[in-house]
Image 1: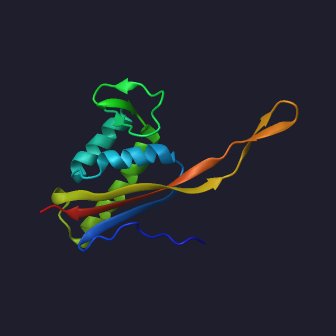
Image 2: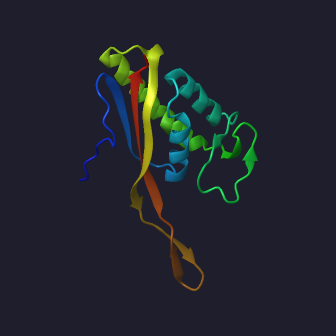
Length: 150
């Protein structure tokens, strides 16, 4: 059984949430986490909801060779709705942890948001002439830390 830990240390009081082995793309999760890092909690939640509704794109910085430009992204971007929905759930979990600890929800800011590749579910795709090609599904670990802004 692998042990999970946060990749950064933040002094208390803070609220943390960890999304383990989520069935979303690691590439999309990294870009969404990069987009919301440093935002206030309310702004990040409405931004992720706008991504789910395909109103605002997420700017992509890596793996964008044949990626179209989107208005509002400042360059290449996409609408990773499944990933935004999953990270929004982790963000709401972190908000619930913060209110349980007695932190003010209006002042919360995302000080750390990162996504890492988790385990890979092996699979295969049948091909012609009784052959097969690997068709694996990577899973993603997302961690979010909230802290009260001064």
